[in-house]
Image 1 (cartoon, rainbow, N blue to C red):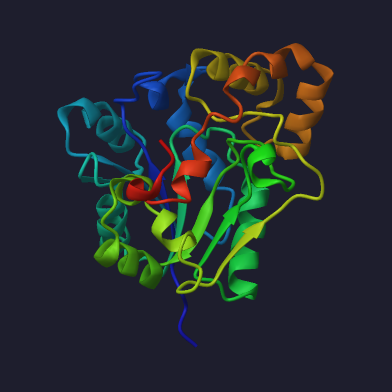
Image 2 (image 1 turned 90 degrees about the vertical axis):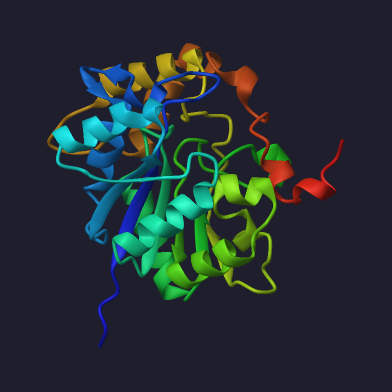
Length: 264
């Protein structure tokens, strides 16, 4: 029986327009990127963790961080992130790819494990953790910021060969999950809706919320999980209020349409 290799690829760059350098902003003395690597390392099903950044000089600090912390790093195109992911997957001989972005320091290893199990059990081409604004999707969602996707190298290669829209090249997987007549897709959904909680870091207010979470919950000997995060935030609703104005403005709806079909 052939053993399939699962590689987690963390998408990271320094040139965020809303919060520049966010992936290396420190919480309790450690950059956010370090926490993402650490939290993914708790997932036994992952064989290797790689940071995929760009060849731009602005991303040299990410490469330096990876080298100093003995984390694998691949440098590719800044804007064509689909190509960057595909080349990273080839370089590290991935059969299955886990995609996590550098603005998700709270990525939950338990949910990622459940996602991988679902992906394998249902023989999907792509599966994602259902996150984001529930009002848009009209179904229960996990908190934004617990995002992760799991997909086959063959699906990634087909997207790499065929996707031409700028949004598909920038966001890596929309070509796959938008074409469900071609790809078998699924999602990991929660039993209740948590879309009122935002844990991704795109703004200073997001960073303040996540910093408070780590200061309250972080222990190096074990990862804190979603239930602990939700319980802490519901006990401290003023933290939930910090970034409520950004919920629903993530642009998920537009990703369901190619650029030439978007609403004006």
